[in-house]
Each structure stands twice: as C-alpha cells, then as structure tokens.
Image (cartoon, rainbow, N blue to C red; front, side, top):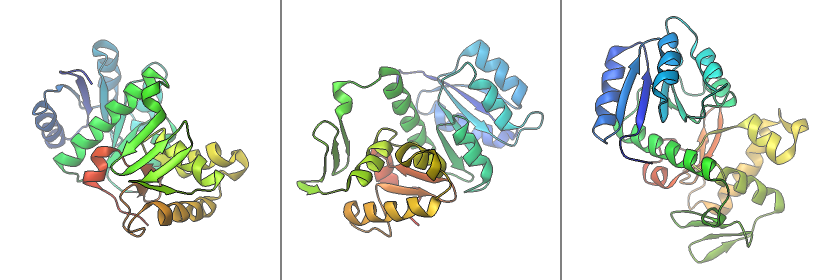
Amino acid sequence: MKNNAVVLIVDDEKPIRNFLRVSLVSQNYRVIEAADGRSAVSLSASHVPDLIILDLGLPDVDGLEVLRELRQWSSAPVIVLSARDGDRANIDALDLGADDYLTKPFSVGELLARVRVAFRHAARSVGGITDADTEVRIGPLCLDLVKRRVSIGEKEVHLTPTEYRLLVHLAQHAGRVLTHRAILRHVWGPSREGETQYLRVFMANLRRKIEDEPAEPRFLLTELGVGYRLADQDEVEFSPREGE
C-alpha cells in the first residue's frame, strides 16, 4: 500500500481513538476520526479513506447500518471493532462486506498486522488474478494454483478434491475472515449453508494434513463462533487466535 494511506477511525470512545491514532501514525498512516455514524459516512464521502476501522457500538446509528450504507458506494477495506469474540454482529458485519474484525482489547501488533493484511487483500481484489497470484506462500505452506499442488516445505500434501477446493477458497482470501455460511455456500452450494458441523469435519481433516500441531494451528485459524481464516504471512508470526 502507498505511504501516507488515509485511515478513518470510527469510535465514540476517545481513549480508543487516541490509541488507534498513535499506533497508526507511528507507521506513517494519515488518520481522520469520527465519533458517530453520521460523521463517519460524511467523512468517508469527503476524504475517501483507504481503510476504515469501524466500531459497531455507535451512539447515533448502528455500526451495521453504517457499514451497509458505505458498501453501497465504497470498496475501502473495513475492519470492525467488537466488544465480544464470536458476537453475532461480527458475523453480520462480515456478511455485509467487512474485511475483518478485531475484538477488544487488542494489541498494537495485532492491529497493525490486520491493517497490513486488509491492504494486501484490497490490492489483490483490485488487481484481479495475475501470474503473481497463481501461487500462494505462507511460511512453508505453498499452494500452486496452476498445478493444483499443495506442499509444506518440500513435502507434497495430498488432498481430496473437496479439501483442495476449501483450501483454495481460503487462500484466495488469505488473511480475511470467512463466515461458516459463506464458506459452505461457495464450496458446497446453498443447500449446505447451515451445516456448520459438516465444515468442521473437513477443517479438522485439513489441519491433520497441513498443521504440525492440529490442535494449535498456525495456518488454518478459527474465528470462534464466526468462521475461519487462512493466516496471512503476518499472522503466521502472530497467530492471534488458536484453533478449536
């Protein structure tokens, strides 16, 4: 992402805004702030931020409504701030087009890692599929999307066709949280959207084949009560959330 990218912080708590501003400015991001939903929409239209950090508990308009309005005309990455891990609002926000969420409290390192991931994901989305996108590497994990080959280091990993489709779908959104419903719909079709346990079985199988410690995964991360993400390179170092 270009230097001096503009980040809009939307939160009614001044200490949170101060913490976010200091953390982001230290990395040369430019910051604008809004304390409520209406100001957030107005600033988004006038300043066209490159990324938005949005608290859902706003005093005037529900954060989900703000997100719904923004997504009618803005494709800027949105990271949602949430008070509770696995909250239903997190799932709704992701389904409405949020790119990620952070559960309070969070560290500076996790915040900055998620911001970098969101910018990279946005760049891939804008650039479309190129030759550079035919291979995904995260630490020792490599997916060759042309040869349909998965490997850990020099060792090839043999997957079933469904396991491969699932891993590729996660890889195409590396670093981004995908809800159970969204994964099931894409990989298995609309008739399977509600079968979360079905997805858990396949994820467990993938972890046994890919992870050194399936109970403490580095790559296939669980977002409790929400869904899964394939870790981005930053998250391999970070691993903010462990597996089920």
